[in-house]
Image (cartoon, rainbow, N blue to C red):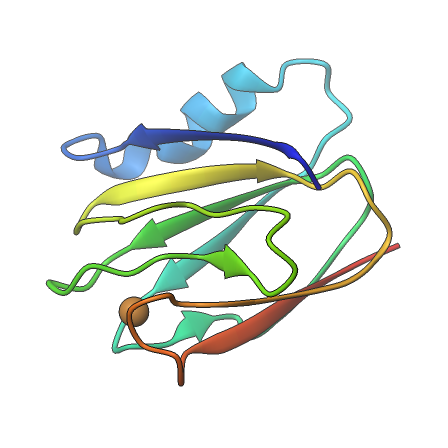
Length: 111
Ligand SMILES: [Cu+2]
């Protein structure tokens, strides 16, 4: 899972699903949303298909990251309202955590 981009959605609000669809206009990739709120990733376990896109969005006042246990991806510091897009390219379980709050853990299961 090596393909990722980062962008800010600050101020875009409800436009995000439309924009995500526009960015992946091939019509095949499903876009999944992971919210970071209350010092937790939601959903904590996300099942996707290889080729899908996961968008992590920080809704907390505190900064967070979405960082792969194996180093395959790292959002870097996400402030409130910022998001990170990850295109899932490998099957399997991809565990990740927040680099600032190590108790925050979650995983993406791709098949
Ligand atoms: Cu955090």
